[in-house]
Image (tube, rainbow, N blue to C red):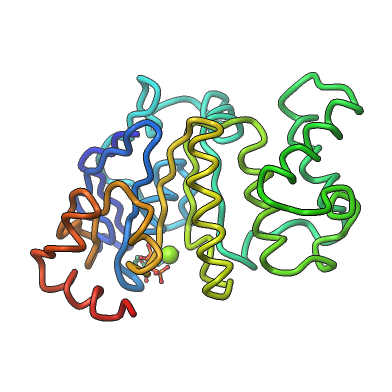
Length: 251
Ligand SMILES: Nc1ncnc2c1ncn2[C@@H]1O[C@H](COP(=O)(O)OP(=O)(O)OP(=O)(O)O)[C@@H](O)[C@H]1O
Ligand SMILES: [Mg+2]
C-alpha cells in the first residue's frame, strides 16, 4: 500500500495534511501519534470509510496497481472484503450481539466463497485455532458477550484474516486489553504475517506496543507525518521533539 500526499479536511480545515507512506509486503508499519493527530482518519480514508463531512481533498492510495481513491463501488467492495481487512478497537465495531461468533465468521465465507457448510465450519475452527483460542468449538458456539475481551479481540482478528487479505489495517486493536494481552495480540500479528504473508498497518498512540514488532514507524502530529523510518532508527534516535515526547511515556 502506497499512500501519496493524502489530504483530508473537515469544514475546510485539514486534519490529514500531505501524508505519504508505504507499507511494504509482509511488513508491519506502525502509525503512531497522539490523540487527534489524524491516524484513524488516514486509515479510514484509504478504504473510503470516512464519516460524512470528512472530505478527501487530494492524494492516492495505490494498492495492487490501482488507486483505491478512484476505483468504482463494486471493486472497492471486493477490496474491502477480500484484500484489505480492518480491525477496530472495541467496543465500537464489535460483533453483532445476537449472533454467535461462529455464525459471524462463517458469514464471511458465505458472502465471499462457495464453501459448503462443513468446509465453512472447518475453516472457522482452524482460524480460531490460529489466533490462539484454546477451545475453538466452544468459542464458535458462544455469543460475543460470553467471551472475555481478549478472546473477542482474537475472534475479530480471526474474522479479519478469514479471506487471507493482503493487508490488515488495525486501529488501536489492543487499547482495551491489559498489557499482557496487548503483547499477545502483537505476537499474533507477527505470526499471521508469517502464516498468511500479509502486511499490517498498525495504528496506535503507544510507541511501547510497537517497539518490538514494527518494521517501520511513522509519527503523526497535527495531521502531518513529522518523522518516519525503520522502527529501530526512529525509536533509538528520535529526531523530532514530538517523537521524544511520545517516547518519554514508554515505560
Ligand atoms: N467526524 C468528524 N467530524 C469532525 N472532526 C473530526 C471527525 N473525525 C475526526 N475529526 C477530527 O480530525 C482530527 C483527527 O482525528 P482522528 O480520529 O483521525 O485522530 P486519531 O489520531 O485517530 O486520534 P485518537 O488517537 O484519539 O484515535 C481530530 O482533530 C478530530 O477532532
Ligand atoms: Mg483514532
